[in-house]
Length: 493
Ligand code: HEM
Image (cartoon, rainbow, N blue to C red; front, side, top):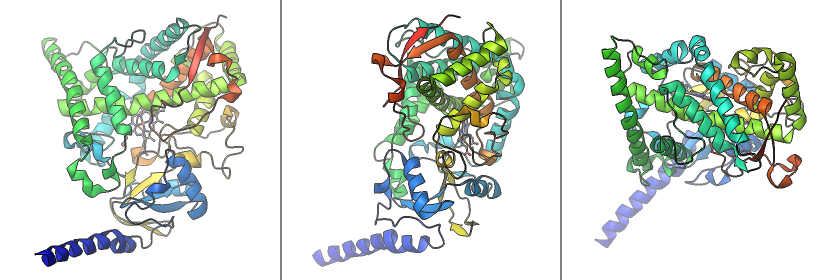
């Protein structure tokens, strides 16, 4: 019996070795060069909390265009130059348009209806079309400008009320953005800025929980065979959280449908929900899309605004230039979104913030739908592909004095983030480019301009702005450590 058990154990051991060593070795044939992986863990131990910076260093050694590495048993290819980004996001856009869906988010009902995670199938095309022609159309964006302007001013009033007190800027900006989204999406606030327990506490908690779960590591992303067991219950937690959010929204959707029926087919409110109902989307699609807009829009935009505030704090002369531009163009008028096209320095400032601090430094991971050849290397089917937009935007071969925060570099330049200039791709590119660009740029522009026009602030404890340490963590972090703390001071013209 013992001999039998030992034989079975040996067979399993050999299969295990085969899977992790021999099969792995053969699957690396033709891949871009990269650091030698350790057995089983691959190059995981070489990653810290800033993979985009570590990947930038690896690119120096192994391949300025493309290099590959193993994260556990997953093969990952990283593009780190504009030429390689062009290949991934343009030349091979179709084949490389799959998404690598994080294991915690593999909740079937959500993924199938998700614009972020589903394949570029008919459902995805329909959702993108609704976004392009309805939700983010120029008419819709313009019609809701007054809401964002009012919320930006509410934020200023809130901060003025905290004069002399220390404020963690990300929390108030995040709260403001969630409220703007609440208003744009279903015409109601989610947070009460002045009362941390106020607003819709239930919805606020669910959204925080979702964002935190999205940021927590799942070992199954490195060892996919663990995925089906959901060992740490992360997928179940995401599914529960989504269900709770959908339940709240479900009640609202039912109420809207009822009101629409009674009002002979017209929805009284002009918000995203009414657009989606009018577009004939079913509840599951609406739920998934609303979740996506909240998830993809709030954290990215609020972290960009936090970076903008940090740069303004560190560079008071830039804050002054923004103020002077507004004074000369608008006089004493309060800034509005429709003024942004007349404020070139503000536009250049937003671009420079996105260049140095892209909210998703390596975009969202893509997946090869088929094996293909890119720049003479083999990219195997199902391989994960990342584009290091952060490294590209700091490459001294492309940018003069790349680490200097200088909005001037964009003045008089046609360089834009709309996916055609592959040296500057904070919103990605190709068919999966961020559909929220028109909204994100309005948000960021109006909030930054309103803060600069109406408020002054300093760092706590008389700290000198030059001492401000500005370090990115990986991508979609809530930037809890170190947060930007400021002391608001009102300014009066
Ligand atoms: C500063 C703000 C933002 C940044 C930096 C940003 C960045 C990105 C990036 C890099 C991608 C992946 C693109 C690719 O794979 O090539 C993406 C996708 C996406 N973004 Fe944004 N985003 C921002 C704001 C928003 C907003 C405000 C919304 C909507 C309200 C939004 C909705 C989406 C959606 C739905 C996708 C998935 C698109 C798809 O897979 O087809 N984003 N975003």
